[in-house]
Structures are given as C-alpha cells and as structure tokens.
Length: 89
Image (cartoon, rainbow, N blue to C red; front, side, top):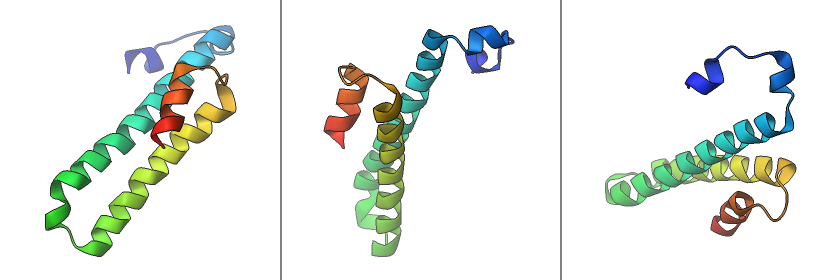
C-alpha cells in the first residue's frame, strides 16, 4: 500500500515500467482473490446452500476473468504472469 499511496511526480506515473509494475500487482491481486475464494468455497462446500455456492463460484470466476482481461490487454504474450493466469483459467 505504501507504494500506491506515496507521492510521485506525474512523469513517474507515465513511465512504462511503473505502469506495468502496478498493472502486474493488480493482476496478481485479482488472481489471488479468485484463487482464495475458490479454496474457501471448496473447504466449505458441504455447508453452503446450492444457490450460495453458485454465487460464490461466479464471483470467483469474475475476479479470474478480470485478471485475465487486464493481463491479455497490457502484457506481452510471452509474459509468465499472463501464461499462468491463462492456463489456470
């Protein structure tokens, strides 16, 4: 959070490396949210009603799709992060 909240100049924000770095953090965050939601769902599946389970599955898929959309849009095709998110989808 410190990195996102620190004061920087506008020129630094427009830097390609800085932009890709922040995008990578966002992609990893969305991907981790999706993965953790899936793990929690699997561990508690027997206690959930079917409609709640389906809702949680859709939410997990949403975050994974968001990570994939951003990765496909901005990262080069040979990027390991993109490949990992794509293969796990």
